[in-house]
Length: 137
Image 1 (cartoon, rainbow, N blue to C red):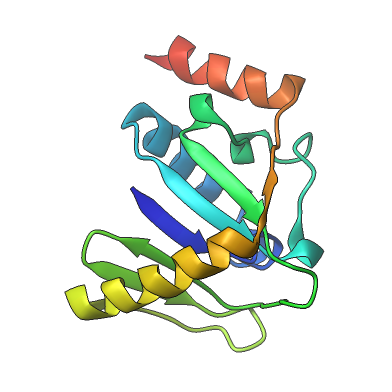
Image 2: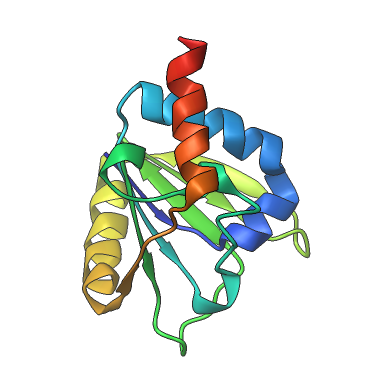
């Protein structure tokens, strides 16, 4: 399981849609479950980004942060690592491997998770993306 405090529009701008399409195909194929929190001003259209769907079939749950919490830098927690990525404005990223940092970040993430509202991004485009994954196997 992974957890991400992720300003998705900023990350799409930095990493690009092709990266996220590939990442999510591999993540879904490997059944890697993730929880993501997006700021309310960064929600994307599922029709434009079908690989960002959520729900059990996507092995992802997305929640939206309260409107008074906006952020342009994000982090992604996985195993004993936390990857931090800034927006294009500051343009930097780094990974720290530390079990203690992961514990701290997860504690903060889980507290925030309770304050966030669920978001479901699914539509015909997202279902087609899932179908394409099984067709490619």
